[in-house]
Length: 639
Image (cartoon, rainbow, N blue to C red; front, top):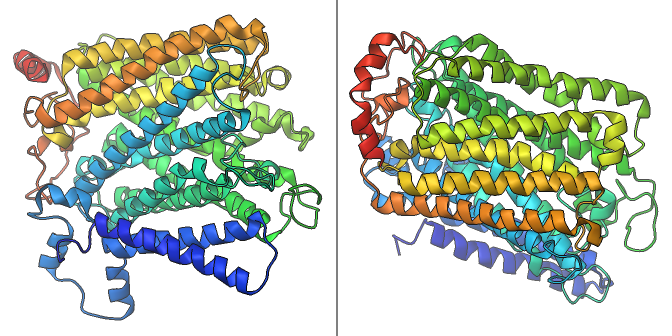
């Protein structure tokens, strides 16, 4: 029994008990008071059940032990207990427990992100299967809209997490010469919160089907979940709102931890101008997460109040399923969402900027060209990203006098973005290029993100946006930015740090096959989607005019190739992790601190805190010549 508690198994058991107890308590309480039946009362039980589901999970995994120890002024844990909490000598079981070792938390995040991307990819497969031919052939419209909503939101949650989670936890503390994160228990808690959030999110399709009251099941709003629509959609909206609020709370806690760690725990000599660009990118993203995520959380909380307690923050009038006394403001929901929603795009992209800069420098064997310009670009995007959100509302009628201002700021953000691209091109210029798998994914980020950025310029222009808004052109642009940009960088980061995180090398042959399948499938699929958008095809529709059939057929065929290639890359991760060739401590000959530690990395990272005397990009002609002889051996290990 001692082995059972605390653990993830215990957490799952107590979470289920908590949900049943909470939801049944509300049901019987309402029944005893002879309250009228209705979906809002059912959803009150859902919310209370989800709350106790979450609390039961935290109790079961042991996450609440130390806060209560502190509140009750009991004995603080000694060093031996702290080491046990960090997973010392625990073996593989430490990956299935509440643990404070930042490296274990990073691996936990990586596995969860791969699961999230897997479910999101399944949603994409179902969407493209439906859109392969005109006619709602596979799913009812309500089911299709639920799939679209879940795919969009789950992919956003995954992409928000897939840099700060795995690499911000595992790599960044070692990169700056720290032994751990600033708040180890908060770090473990941020991951622990995300797990029940994803479980609740994946339950969305199972809520409310068969209801006779018109609410039905799932959620049909699209990933923007605007308040007036969200009060009228299926019961799955309550599960979505609860899950995303929890995920947002996890993101904020993780971001605060990353910011504090980078500011306060850098090794002696690790000045701001000596930090790797990856650290700068994740630092900028953490600032955006800490400042912007709460806006969306407030939006979702107000939606829950409108749905369950008949408030009227967003519902303009009574009637139908629009609850409340009226007088709500739909624009309020849009602004709350997009004040998070557009900085969120750069929250995803900023770490990609930093990681690509580091990877290109390593495999060009050159110092980063104009390091300070790169930092200025990253932090410039961080600031300007909060000044552009209203361009999503050009067609809404809100504050038309501000259209020029937001059009100008949206186009202005291309300036600091351009700084980063100039730094990358300057670093590549006359470099000694080593075409590894991480390098090729980093280069693919360049051409894909350029297409995403250029298509975004069209959407920042008011007259063009009015014509293209709500169409497939927007969908293609967004996917070029997030999938073609950030996801390609995630694949580069996995390939680059996989040897350090797992002690194994990725299978290069499978990696290259997956790479070319991903590039061909992605580019043909979404270039074709641009054509459908220019022809006038709207987004989020299960059926469409036959005039768009050819473009959609091409998109679906190559989307299937993309999905299959991503699945192959994930398969490569799994089999390489289990049986791949063992990696040496520094297979790439990189100069940053994480590659100067043994593999596997010791519990406290360094025997002694390092003293930093230079930036991690100081490749000289002598070091390049010395490493040239070692490169074939590293290439054999990589193969």
